[in-house]
Image (cartoon, rainbow, N blue to C red; front, side, top):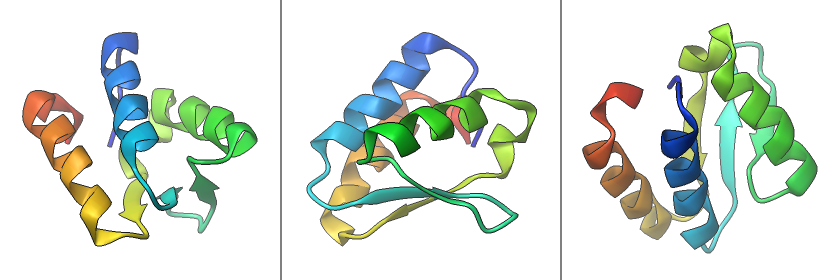
Length: 80
């Protein structure tokens, strides 16, 4: 997924904040960024905004949290 503007990024981070469990972005190199960790979140934001942003995979520990991202993706189809 590649995020190209700050409005979309804020919406994505709002979805992360609503989640009860951990949310991860996983790169093709095996890097795993926990978006619930402040330090990891900043690194992940850099990856999302970079050229490699479209190669990141989203993973939620709790199934119930996936609905927040489904709503985000419905409102921002260009991200997928």
